Image (cartoon, rainbow, N blue to C red):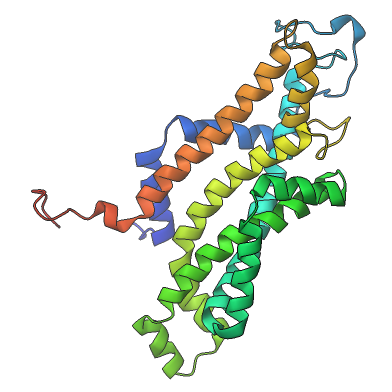
Length: 291
């Protein structure tokens, strides 16, 4: 007798069977390269002057940069930095934003008014400009990039969590939990967060793509990852000086950045459609049978 498959596992397997495609494959490669990078025989900072600006060849798939360092090795290291920063920023932003937005909507009153005004101030400026300002004040470095991007990124999660909680707190099951004397932590954990999870996961997916671009942009401006560490943004910045004679220095990291961001956004769109139950309900008059 087969053991019943638990719902999360069954849902994940069903989603993978129906949605696996090139974005998923690209993201898996990105993650695998980032994780396996330290275990590979890479030399991202090895300078070889005879190899300066040499294009792609059998020894170096993507050629060498202006110091004779292999571009492929530096791309793999940059993938690790990009993944580390994007996942860290998105997780911390989601955690802070969910807590702030949920508590703001639950208690309402003066607390909600203050938090909404703070969010309005952050939303009054483009996110990338705020990130540049924060990074400029904190200084370059991986930790400072994470702090700067978290200070900008929590707002989107807080708005989403607040909007959802304003509706969910009036649901019958939440009112019943209150009537039974359940505490606020239990209500949030057992009755609100399960319903907040789907939109927050979708928001986090797009948030990862935004952080990948933001990290590359800050590194391109010299406010992010500093030499000799490799970042996709800094690799592009260093390669712009040799664009005419060695275009591979810009095309390789630029193409990698484009593929990763495009894959994340495409996967996020599909994930949003899959989690939207209403999109799978046959409309009246469509001729489809229910059940």
